[in-house]
Length: 157
Image 1: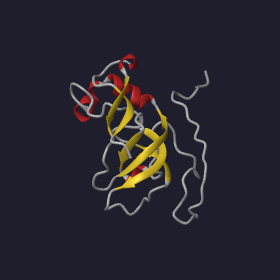
Image 2: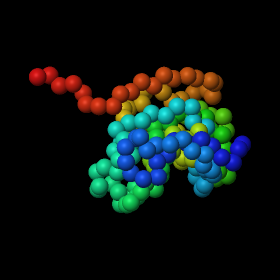
Image 3: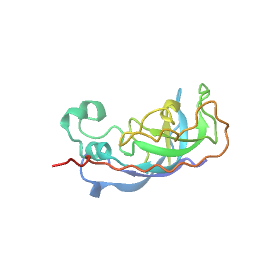
Image 4: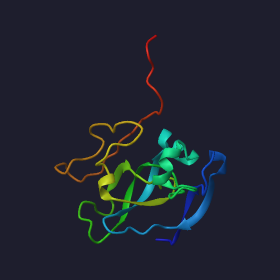
């Protein structure tokens, strides 16, 4: 695996026009994490709000003057390419979908806890009930189409 990867990132809060494609170091999976090769990323309203640094109330958690995680993309689908030595709930080659709390999905690889892979609800919409295999299902190859939209539900007038 290479030491650098491509990622769309923005070092300061602001509009999407400031996002640039850059080469950055590949993240290393730390204690309890897996490394994913990203195949698809869903951007939602939360990503846009964090990109803008709005509301100000979230800045103590995500970075006061600039984002702690400059690579956005909280919803991701990908393939596990490496696991930390202490991870037993995921294996290399497993295809997963889930939510990255800090972001990182707009990079070609990202590190995340294995519980994020198929075990949490994506932010913009609930995952389809059979989108992820259960531990009792065989490990055969599966494909799932996830369709979601961000916004409000229409209201009757």
